[in-house]
Amino acid sequence: LAYGNGSRSSSRALYMFTDHARYLFNCGEGTQRLAQEHKMKLSKLDDIFITHNSWENLGGLLGLSLTIQDMGVPEITLHGPPGIDHLYEHSNSFVCLKNLNIVTKNFSDQFCDDCMEITKIPIFKTVNPSDSVIPSSFSEELYSSDSSDDCITHRLSWNLARIIPFQLTRSIF
Image (cartoon, rainbow, N blue to C red; front, side, top):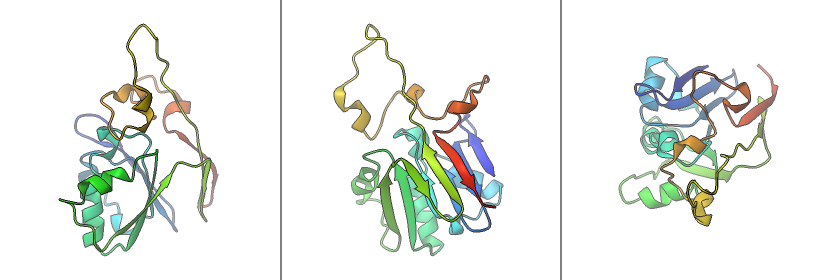
């Protein structure tokens, strides 16, 4: 288990692995550097989970995709909120991923494979109507300038229920 806590020198990322599978939660800028520092094997990465469509969570995804393509990884599964697939659609003019098949899956109620069951726990920001008006398309936007509604909280007083918007319901190590 290796992670970045979202500070200036470390991107938001959590890399979990078992003997049979490897998972990455979020992929902020600098995730590849973090992976190299912790000697994580990106070539064996199976699934990437993006918890919120923000640059802090996806800033390193295109570069990571190019790197794992160069390593010979044939396919990766990207789990995320609606619109996550638009990132690759809009970047195909400058990011060439001919040898990497990216399977995108919107969040479902549960993810299950041979090693883990992961249940999504939605976390929503409470909005005071007098603060500002949020457009109705806000939840479908690919990029959000407000990272305070992120699913991962990086504060000194951590609330364990908010650390990650997934609940590990079963693990086989």
